[in-house]
Amino acid sequence: LLGMNGWYDYQFSQNKENKQILRMKNLYWYDRFIQREGSDLEVNARFLEAVKRLLDDLDSKGLEVILATHFVPKKEFIVYQNAPYERWNNLNAFLGSASFGELLDQYHHIKQVVFGHTHRRFEEKTIHGTIYSCRPFGYCYEWQLTRDFVQEHHLIEQYNPMKLRTLLRQHYPLFSEYQTHHLSKEFEKAMTIIPY
Image 1 (cartoon, rainbow, N blue to C red):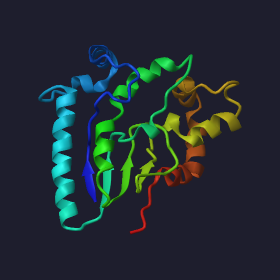
Image 2: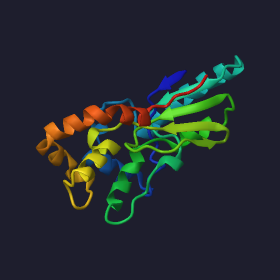
Image 3: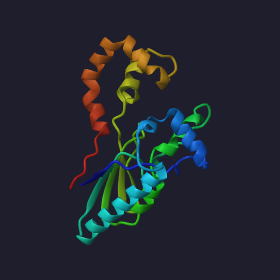
């Protein structure tokens, strides 16, 4: 089991102007507060070098790898929104690193890659012989049980995730009871179990 945080290389963005991407980061993204040596692209390049050394070493020893990382390594797990939510596409620049995914494609001893950061779950996908699992737990207002709760209790006419936090606070005792009965299923949906 090989665990690492990862970083991003802006390649998942539809915007190809790095200055505009950096401006967006400095306005909205929490990582703007993290002091790192070098730019995001330099941090990502150093990360790739370190990962390559590790993977080469493990490969030379004939060891299989299950890799866990925070950031998204494959474009197949990036969602591109349409109007009226297309402004969210600007943040795709910070979700992961396509160059990391390309590096992983070079190794046949990587059996599975587990990651999150998307705040949405995807079905497992096999890409170049490696299984990719993206089942982040996320915030409670992103859970399926939360969606089920507000719909079963007819608390909103049209589902809007941006209004859920306030709604859940207003109905906290009822939501808390609902969670007690359904949270274990939500955990199960977010788990990645690897038979090994």
